[in-house]
Image 1: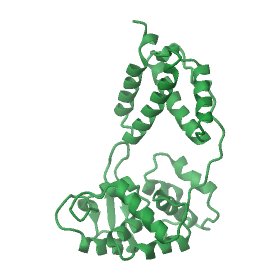
Image 2 (image 1 turned 60 degrees about the vertical axis):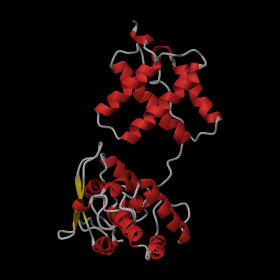
Image 3 (image 1 turned 135 degrees about the horizontal axis):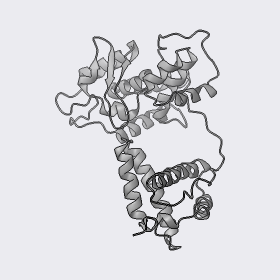
Image 4 (image 1 turned 30 degrees about the vertical axis):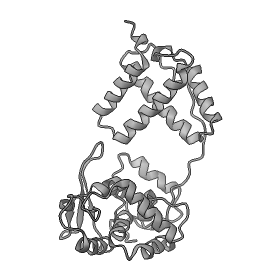
Length: 291
């Protein structure tokens, strides 16, 4: 059978297996797969059932269709990244004769700066959740350590070292293990919660009243409610992480150290924040800024 005649479903399956073998995050694999399945569905009406039958014009038509459906330029660009990665893989495996996505250009769009909370905003958020020890501890940890919300949800009691004032973020998916220092504000809020934390139950630090893990989606909705209560508009949970990174860089904490704490794979990811911050400490220092 001609390699170019391998049906799209099988090609997508092979690509997914490749991503899994690379240790890519499950969310990334899901996003890439959905994007490629979307163009496959779009082209099915034209009888394009194999990767080898897809042309650059087909991909441009898909782009135009997305634009007509009011997808943002950023969303279209992200989908195009998935398609380009898909065809690079197929070409590397000699499953197609040429890469039709190589010549397709990305739509232009302005990169929005990360949403960074002002001191007034994150202090208002603290005040709003002060009567809820669990949410108060979550907010402080996200704000003072910059950890991802998924990392916080997976945090186990055994990952806490309150004697040495540090937290171990265990390796998962494509993220390596790392240690994060625990400052006074975060430690105080965490200790206040642990006193009231339900006994037994899951190994997770943050659990429900019935002892089950406090899931990411529930953490998001809870903090969103406190954003509303504190009058903070257009903010999301991930903005607490953005605030940590930006504030540390503005305080003069070394870029490489901030990147390591944030768990960024590439230094360039951390460097992007420098484009949007308005202040910079006059002298780099290893001490972390307490927010």
